[in-house]
Image (cartoon, rainbow, N blue to C red; front, top):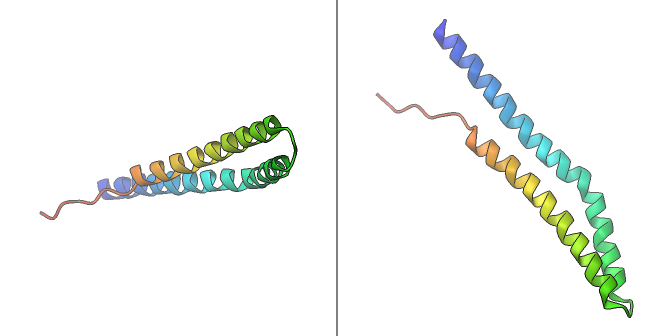
Amino acid sequence: MAAQANADAGSVRNAIRWGLLLASVGTAGFRLPSLVNEFRAWRDALGLADASIAEGRHTVLMVELIGVSVVVAIGIAVFYVLRPRVKAAE
């Protein structure tokens, strides 16, 4: 009975692990079109005479990029932390 309870806890932990990883990748994928649009807007603003517009667009682009990177990094870190424990050979 104890072995089955332990197996169930491991499968729930594994499901949470994969679910969080997929959620982080899905969130990054959802934000990707916005990130591409911000990149294009920044590149277009570089051709304008006013440098402050390009600087503002670059700031927005960096904030979007850092946000996506943080979400993916947290997802990967949680995926790594919740990995199954290896039992020592007795």
